[in-house]
Length: 477
Image (cartoon, rainbow, N blue to C red; front, side, top):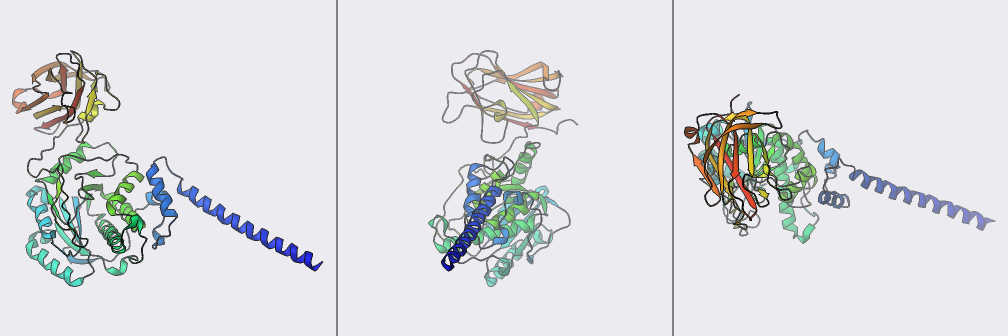
């Protein structure tokens, strides 16, 4: 009898343990299901990122949240910054330029980078920018020396409120030793890139309310002339379209532009996954999680990497952006317009892609005489310069062999079917290209439409690589 009772007690214990194990598995499954609750925007690669992160225990557990939590991050991170030079102005600027810098074993390019930012900006542009330098090294003597150098060379910019130097104390940093060695990186490499993520997170957190937009640079960068004017034109051209990140360089995290209202979320995101991967990889995942699937990068690039030695161990780093142009960058205005064509469009190379500043193009199947590519402007404009390029380097024969460019007036029709009734021919395409300056002196009316007319059928397909329009005055109100 005693044996029977013992046996029954043992079975009851086993059932309890089995029930607990089952509940444990169920809870884990529910947690994973919660990670996959989404608004239809999480890409497959980002699901993998979340899944991998969920299976590792992050040292800084307070930053582990689901994508839905990330969407709601709007508050700042609690950090008491040290102001080493300058203070924030009460008036918001248009653009904040953020730099994070640490002591290098070889070379130091920070002063040259700051100099380039200010020298390549006009007086009017300087009124709209704020530069924030985060001296992120824990060596206080190095920080003090750098502050002295910056204060001596750029005193007038500090006094004018255009330049601030800050430092986030070491006590606010999460654990940086004994981190996971993802991608087989050596321990010191993991520590370096993990700290760099936190450096940028604290910089972003500080800059969140200083301006309307924020651009991320490294501390060894050269700028294009009047880069702010180019950035403003691009932002204006994207009005009405959704974007998270606009890219003005193809290298790392140089020249990545954000809305300032996204900075708190990005700062939290970098802290959340600070030990997982390098900063530039995290920026790609952040963009995807906020539903910008494709890269939106503009050419020519506005920023160039100029350092020869990396901040990591002084290793050589001779990366260059071959799309960078220092002096000749002149981004077109391309006023808001509706575009259409009667050509047979190939796949998704639609008409709008030729009018964009992004590196993409329109591609149509062999056009016939009389085929049109039409631009109808939302408001009448004065044009100073027009430039149209057809074909690409790898498809040099897909050009417009015989065509003309015309501008029109006297708009008729409803909003969707608006068209001009009268056109003036400005000239013919030569070798697939059309370019004309001083258009406002040759066209006496305000222009409502512009069109490309195929004047002779061709067997080759047609790529319109870019349509660039510069206006001589803002569109009529």
